[in-house]
Image (cartoon, rainbow, N blue to C red; front, side):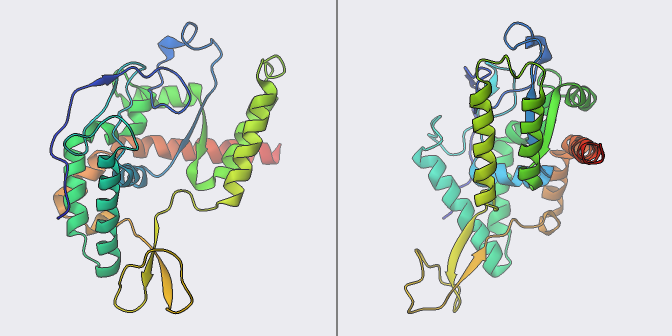
Length: 276
């Protein structure tokens, strides 16, 4: 039987403004925790896709201020490590639910898991972009202001173009030459671009299944059987029960506003550069 989320915990983790942690953008920290002229780079994607991806991977952190990042509990006994057995079990359950939805066009198990996730980890996905851009009041208007004033945006649908833009911004900055890690930043940005060029599909879940009977196959084709590659779907929200549809849209309504502005900023500024 597939497990669902059952509980949540109120717990805070000592995350600071460091690489690879999820914290909210708080301008009051500029000038003492962060430099005065802070560059904030952030990529965005379709909000519903982001919510479902967080569900698939068992994302458990909210978007609070540094030191105030809350974590929910996916399964009883889940610890704070992303490599925990509980998290692996969670991801396998979701993959199985997606497999059922893909091969049998049956989303009931998927919806059951999603309901449990949104019950326990609602704060982690509740208009996550608004949380990130305004971790103090979660106000979409404040979030828009901070987005436009502080963030150098990118879009995950076009990461090569995003990384090109970020590299140009960093290397074109008036303070770049004097930065103690200028050449390190340049090298990292170049490496990131190469990695995305080599792998055009970003963290997509793909499973091998046998053509006849839909039997799951582990490993590569040994040459004796015919196998086909089937990409696991993320069920369309329109396939969900009405109440779940409404919940998903409620949890992404503010982020839709943010994402629309991100797209305008990204492609508008890029067109300006192209025509300049």
